[in-house]
Image 1: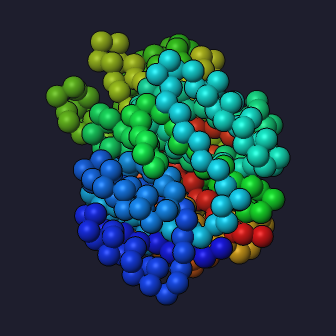
Image 2: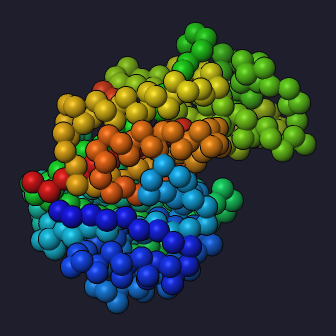
Length: 379
């Protein structure tokens, strides 16, 4: 499988880059497209449609093809997969029937391939991403390979989109199913955040709404551990500080902890809504602010993926949490460069609202403050 990555900030720039990419006889039939909501995605999709290239499209909070993140741009990973090796599925879920949608899609893919693997992206911040994943698990089995993200919207948290040829949804799912007997797809989710303090018990929560930890309002306890001052709704930086620097780490009996940053504060009772479910009675630890070691752990994790599972790759897709970009700023270049240098093949990635993958030794679930690296190789 041959792959090439291109980028641009207008449909004209993408068209020029596409023409340059195929000038040597390269004939892609699949485009993985990450772009800003400010981009003209319909015109860009039409370019690929005209070239008979199928589109797996997601809006993002930032995009990259190498170590330098872009803003308000489009990046594309072009692949020349054989048509028999993949299928596209898409569906809206206006009735919140998340698990039913993915269970049915996975069932169809299993009929086509027997042993399918999946690249997925969903839109809408109220989507239960873990229910989406549960549909794949129930249809295929707990070890099914599923990697993906929840779409972004340039940090506005207003409206996100997934799209493909002649279809898009602000509350839906796009799925690329691959024949795992022909295409190897393996990935790893790593956060790298260091925990601080002892385990604490979530004493009151409902779904992703965390009220108290050790019977103390979670916002107050987070502020205490983080040394956060000016704990007030008038402080415009408070939410980014909590989400970017002091996410909760949901402890697991099996595998690495799962990050659950607070994203929306209820100032009435100092509770907050996390990015994913935090069951009442579960155990959490707080996080230290990120440092250089956080990025190095991600790069080391990718090195281990290459050494143990995926010695070679034709292309790499990266889903990195938008919170990492907020936390690291310009230092994010170092992490992306480290990932790029592992296989040194064409890469495309985005900063997402959530990452969908399996952490080291863990289950298939939704992550935050995490980088998910996915490598593809034709057998």
